[in-house]
Image 1 (tube, rainbow, N blue to C red):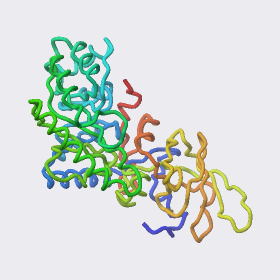
Image 2 (image 1 turned 90 degrees about the vertical axis):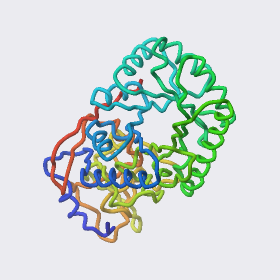
Image 3 (image 1 turned 30 degrees about the horizontal axis):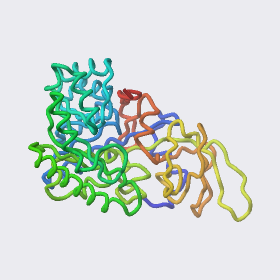
Image 4 (image 1 turned 60 degrees about the horizontal axis):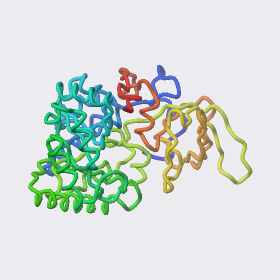
Length: 376
């Protein structure tokens, strides 16, 4: 979209029924993103298991499954419960669970209602998972988490067998391995991270095969790397942000402005006086409580303006966004509505109870953010 779009033309893209600040989901762009990823992954011969912690919405999950997704990825038992209740029957909890008695009871119930798999990355965690599930342990498949360079959770590939043996001894079904190449979220890193992901999975598979374990599932792929994954190291990928896009993906070159399906409608509420020769500044009514506060060191600001990509959000307070105006024309007047692209869309979705669904600039419905706050 042209950066020189007149400021007063932007409100036509925001339905009059939408008050600000409000998250907007453009369902036409959303559906295009879902279909494009589904087709691209299918062409590579992989299964697609989208990470639903990004959108948190059953209606979007249904669209992903209808487009061919093999199942969903979630981060918590609470997220799994919500999606299982909405009819999803194949869920991977991509997290090294440590079961309390309460979580064990919930996980046993889940295993009776859907196909459930979970992550393990320690012998202690595997033993606790099996003990907590008791007789239901055999109903849960586990994937050993591998550190492929992000250095968060996960074991080195050569340590995978010890974790797998602990899981097997605890009565769990070891189905394979998974990794998260989270270090792909930085300029110049997606290609390198994808290569490291594939090598780590390859080494882990060799380690497990030598120990007598089959690895039917080899799961990888973030939004920056999903379309870069090649070869036989992986059987499935788990991107999440691709459904919406965000300012981080935009700056990493992993999506274009026309791929952005989620924006925050905001209103200009104040102008700020600046010294002669410096860019004008104004204030929007969308702060960190709806945009989230993530800003990687390499990012150009705290978000972007959809229709004015040269503008920069230079500061956030809880209910204020300070925008530095770099367009050639005058800044938008007080009362003008603008669309903001959050830096990290997953955080923005966890800050609201529902979202406005729009198509061709018209409000066509609302979706509840059903797994908001399901953090355990």
